[in-house]
Image (cartoon, rainbow, N blue to C red; front, side):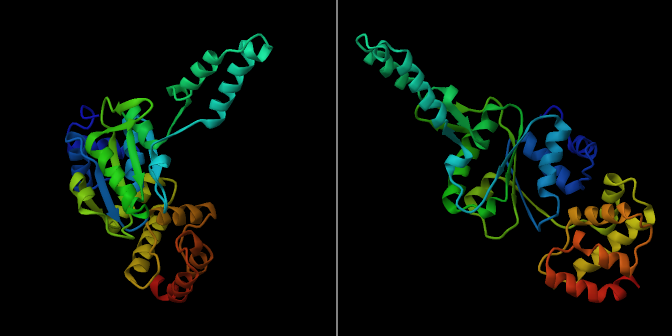
Amino acid sequence: MQDVLADVDQVRKVLAGTGYLADEAVATVTFLASALDRPLLLEGEPGTGKTALAEALAAGLDVPLVRLQCYEGIDATQALYDWDFPRQILHLRAVEALSPGARGDGGSVEAVAAAEAELFDERFLLDRPVLRALRTAPCVLLVDEIDRADDEFEAFLLEVLSTWSVSIPEVGTVRAAEPPLAVLTSNRTRELHDALKRRCLYHWIDHPSLARELEIVHSRLPEVSDALAEQVVALVHRIRDRGDLIKSPGVAETLDWARSLHALGTDTLTVETAAATLGAAVKYREDAEQVRQALDRMLS
């Protein structure tokens, strides 16, 4: 992947080819993550394009995207590997059925013992996202919302990111032939440990400027008229500027809103059409009530 992402300009071209318009800072830190084989930790508000960056990298590089979605209570088993117990049991039963003992002619303890020894062969190994990423070269590994996992899982992940290898007692050590391009995202619902941050290159992704967000809408939704796109983006920025909402709309909501209005055949954003389609951008009842009451002022 380092050959493809040869410099910052090439990173921007690769991402732009998928519709992801990266600014100079995002393109630079992405290039460095690839060039230095370092994980990239992205923090920011929800909807600012953190996950989309990993998806765009995989699409632009034409490599698999291996996604690990973190959640409260996730442990190494869900991230690393497990054994296919149903297949193991079927394997044992098949051996027992075919052994001489099953036909009543003396039995074969050796055959069953050999079958038991095969139970932890790689063919019965179920690889979870982290192990799959190590065995799939090259690829993009997306560890999404790492802030939702606990300290123990964070420590496990740090070890993997430091060595790009895992040890499976029954199989041995699995080491990546080529380190995956790892992207970790965090909505900062909690602070991550310094050790993990030190292992990664760090970048805070903020909401884009009005001009850049308008450029994103034009790139992703060329069918939306220029006038409607400008109105939607301007309104979204006014909503964000309120600063008193539970969750401000992200870029994904801007795109959904513009797409919804276009689907309705709307060319000009009015108070009525904005109120009717507000659910595409604002996801909390309390926020929707506040925004709906202020639409007259925000669209004037």
